[in-house]
Length: 304
Image 1 (cartoon, rainbow, N blue to C red):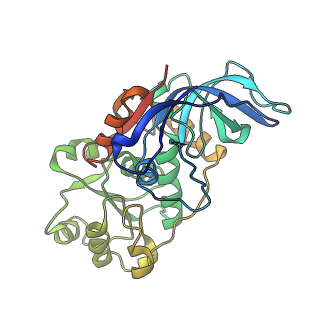
Image 2 (tube, rainbow, N blue to C red):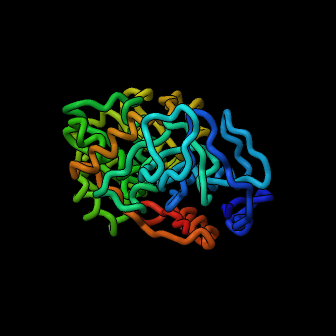
C-alpha cells in the first residue's frame, strides 16, 4: 500500500509517499480502505522528533491518528460491522495510508449526512476538545474562555461548551475570524496586548475555566482571569502545566464518545469546518499549512 511517512526527523520536506506491506485484519479487527485522514499538530510534533508517551516510533514511520473509509476485510469474531460499511475512527500513527487495521471498538458508522472530509477530520480534535472540556468540568451557567477558538480544536470546544450549557463563551481569534466565532455561539475577542482587559470588559463576573490551544502567552493571560488554576488547561504550552499547576488532561479516545459526536453532527449541533484538503501526494503542503497556525477549520488528506 501507499502511505505518507518520514524516514528521518525534520520539517515538512521529510514527508514522502512510500510503499508498505498491506496490513491484514486479525481476530476482532477490521481493515478499512481509507478515503480521508485528518492532519494534526500531533503529527508534526512526532515528525520533529517528539515521542508521545506509550507510542513506539519506528522509522520509516507512517503518521495520522484519525481516518474515514470503507471496511474491506473482517477478522474473526467481529460482529458489529460488515464489509462495505462506511466508517470513521481512530488509530495512532498509521492513518496516512491506503489501508488501516483497527479493533472494532475504534470505529463507528459514518452518518450519510457527513462528508468524507468531515468524517476524516472529526475524531482527533473532536475527542480532544471533549476530553478537555470534561476535565475542566464545564457545566451549565458558566463563563468559559477558549484561546485559538477559530482553529479546529478550539471550534469543537466552543460548540461542546455551548451544548453543555455554558452561559457565556469567549473565544480569542484574529478579527477576520470574529464573524465565524459568532456563528458558533462565542463572543469573539482579539488576542494580543490588552487581552486580559478586553476579556474582563466582556465578562466582569469573571471566567470560570479556560482552554488554551494557542500557547504560553494565552496561558499566562488565563492565570490572571481564572481563580482556580486547576480549571485552566493547555494543549499548546505543555511546559507550563507543572510549572503553573494547571489542569492535567488525560483520557483515551473511545467509540462511544465518537458516536456521541457524530450524533451531534447529525442533529446539526456540531459543525466540522474543512480548511483545505490535499491529496496524499501533497502531504508536505498539508504539514506546511498546519504549521502556520492560521485560519479556521480542519486540514485533511484524501486517499484514492
